[in-house]
Length: 209
Figure 1 (tube, rainbow, N blue to C red):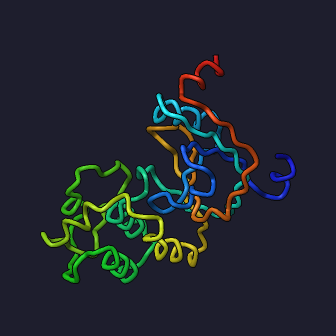
Figure 2: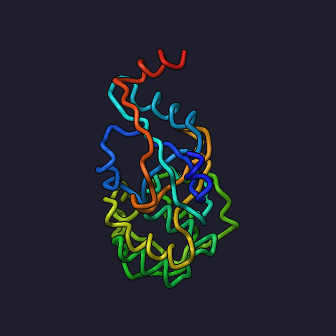
Figure 3: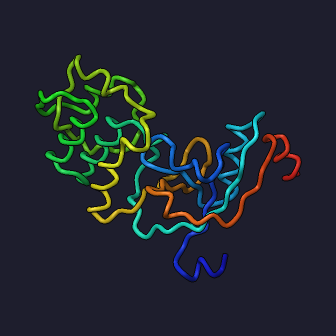
């Protein structure tokens, strides 16, 4: 691990019930990993109480993550694009292009963020009194409620963030892991350096105690 750290890699952890070769198939922007092993184990105890899983250790190549609030699984286009626009990370034009790609209509006028947060699941990050550059109507209900989209559907968003100099996301997980986590855009940014199999979180608890 020291060699990887000296080379500029971060050591991170990922909990999954899949083999490493399948990780890139996750939904959303990318692969979620935790900075600390304790955070990964907390996630495991929450989500795999009675089912088998792996705790994987990686060397991660990420030099300039975009720091964001905890936006859940980062797989809701309307929520994530609204955050990027409000923080002036993307322009009006970029926002509209991406929103339309995810299925929003072309009828766009400024409106309050709250007006189109129909899911009622908005996180409590500061919007600075921001306005969204598009008004969603009844035809856009599918777009507003989209989440869990395949990894491939987010490639345009990943490429745009890469052009702006970001190679991943960093956020403080407030629910599952209680610690610093990252969203890794591409599996090629991860080098597997350790993997341990657990039959369930019960086995993990026995090991910890």
